[in-house]
Length: 385
View 1: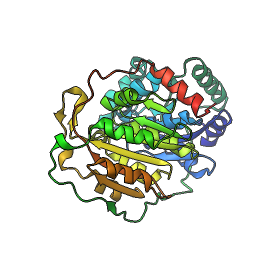
View 2 (view 1 turned 120 degrees about the vertical axis):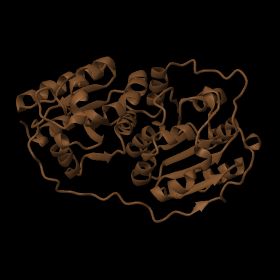
View 3 (view 1 turned 60 degrees about the vertical axis):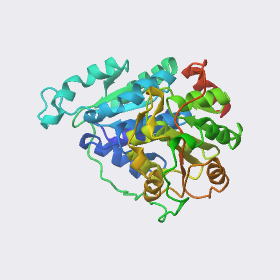
């Protein structure tokens, strides 16, 4: 058994200082130590996949990102681990507990995952080893992690068994404050037909005008949004997500938190936002003033055949206001988007719910630049070492 500080301090020495996670009783001493250290960052994520995406965003910004979770929640992280961190080659450290391990008396819901945790990491092509349970093992474990990151630029996992880390009290219980109740700018939507709303391309062209390459990063969610952004203008400050649906906002949050010098603009979709609604609360609580979240809502999964989502009855703007975004706008016309982009205040994150039409441009291309090339180009552009 080790003390939490032994691992955390050694990890900090090689750059791991930004943590996001969902608690587990096995992790409590570890999380308590991180929360209690003012030189470290801990983000309490709504689910494990958002923790991975936020940590990946921090890595893009130049910090050592760590995502912590219980193995029963590992399933929530499969998508961002396989279609974000793996595909784009984002080296993120995963610390995952081993509930339900063979021979360990545990709750029945952990039994199956306890049996397959190692095999699940292997299936995802993520090398793993057990979290060090003695002081002499800490440096070798971190050295192997560092070497793998330098060689492969992909996630590495440490599986934490019960009684690996000695108890550590929670000495700091920070409360994440929300902004005062936010007034939504813009009237509730009328029954305006989808076909007469602005197109996605019109919205993207306006966003491009408001995001100069110097000083801004534009993250586009998967599907037609990223592809149309690429078609409109392929710029060094663009990041086209090709998977990990719903994780664009968490990725943008991590990046915005560690790079206050950048204006981070996340372009989301209604289907993606619905998939990970909990992240709206996380952004409302943690999101800095340099984070702008724009949700383009056509009430459909457009790239798979325009099957309807349930967003027609969802007031995303009201939800964002309740979650603590500093400014919230809604609209169904390009001038409302223009007004939003020109009226952002200094405090907190900013949110726009824009209704758009379905459909896309003729002969919509896919990015010809590979995901790792997209990321490396962005890293060079924002000067991440």
